[in-house]
Each structure stands twice: as C-alpha cells, then as structure tokens.
Image (cartoon, rainbow, N blue to C red):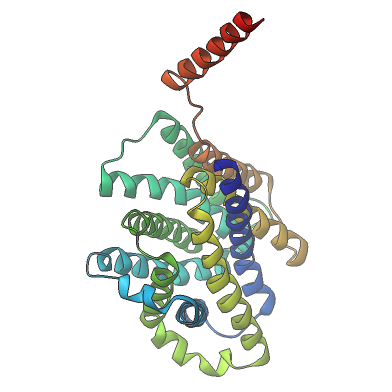
Length: 315
C-alpha cells in the first residue's frame, strides 16, 4: 500500500517542480515590459482565481474548514508567497534564471531547517549542518565574479531572500497539513491574498500585461505554474514524505538551468557551475531520507530468523 501511495505521489511532486522550473526562463524569454513585482502579482493572483474556481466547482465546502486556527499559518504563507514572487522574479531579471534559481533553492533547505527549528523546536541534525555548509559555500561561489559572467550582488541577495521565503512557506504549509486543513482551498486563499499584496504593482502594469507577450506569459505563469503546479504539489505531498518531496524538487533548478543555457544563451563559468553543484549537493544531503537501523533492523532480522527456523522445522 505504501509503495502504491509513493508511486502516485512522486510523479505529482516531480511535475510540480518541472513547472516551477520554467518560471524564470519564461519570464526572460517572453521579454514582457511589466516589472518583476507586477509579473509575480499577476502570476499568483490569476493562479489563485483559477484554483479557487476549481475548488468551488469540486469541493466548495472545503473553504469553510479554514477556521481561525488555520489563519496564522495561512497569512504567514501568503506573506511569504508575495515576497517570494517579487524577490525571485527581480533576481531572475538582474542576475539570470540559472543563477537566481540555484541561489534560491540552495538557500531554501537552510531556511526551512531554521524556520522549522524556531516554529516547532525540531532538532537540527549533523547531516543538516553538512548540507547547509555545502549550500553556503555554493552561494559564495555563485556570487563570486568571474571573467565573462556577471552576477549582480543585489539580485543575488534577492535570490537568498526568496529562498528564505520558501522556507517560511514550507513550514506554514506543513502546519496546515498537520491540522488537517484542505490544502487546495488553503493554497487558493494563500495565492489570492499574496496577489492582493502585490496588486498595486500589477494594476500599474496592466498596459504591459495586456500586450500579446504579456498575456501569453501570464496565461502560462498563472494557470500552469501557479494553480496547476501547486495543486500537483500539495496532492503529491500527502502521498510522499517531506524528505522525498525535497529531493524531487531538485528538478526545479535543474530545469531552470537547462532552459537558461539551451534557450536563453546564458553561460555558466566554472566557479558558478561548481557553486551550483554544491548548492544542489547540499539540498540532496539535507533532503535524503535516513536509512532505518537499530530497532527496525533488529525486528527485520528477528523476523527473518524466525521464518528460517520455522521452515527448518517443516522440512
């Protein structure tokens, strides 16, 4: 039964990561005149409207389950979502899709561990510290200047901020799941509230957003990389562990980097490439599930021995 659950959960989380990995390259490829904050606001506002419509059509009563107990985590997730959009898309615009994505999702596991420690008192393991060290060294290499490759320090800092926001969102979503909150409804509200925060920038950029390029970009970013991707992610997250979901999210920076190199002509220098590898390696170290040992191993060994003895008696 557990294997069957994982079989359905893994592709959903993986698909969400692939869709999220297209956000930065799509932003640069479209070349829309709207600013990063306006694009981020349009993305989550349209995505929230689409997801809310789907939830209303399929399970309207789930919105009533968002009680007062859930709202602190919903508001924290909303604030993190709004800040993430503006910070990440500005980082992409100033320092490139590949570097911005590597920075953001290299910092994300560090931020998630710190936020989880502060919110729930969860103990940070040695493996987490090792993975964090890899991520920090990777960040230093990514922002180091190299011949022919320019990394904007302000954009890099915004990438780090986006990674921190991802950590806040992840811990907030985890608390909502633990409280039994219907996540599609919670995600729809989170996107709508976050979009409302960025609404001034979005409304000011309506002329640019309503051009053919702007509309095409919003149609991809909103319904696909926000509504559909979040739906896939929260559905898959119920069927796989958080550690497995974290490992699968490695596909996001990999997709962004591949698209940036193949479609946008971005170049990665040796130090930046090494830094990106260390960032991804740190994420693997932090996310990889632990091998069970001790009591679990003993129980398995005792069961095997018992079966062998039983078979010998039968023979």
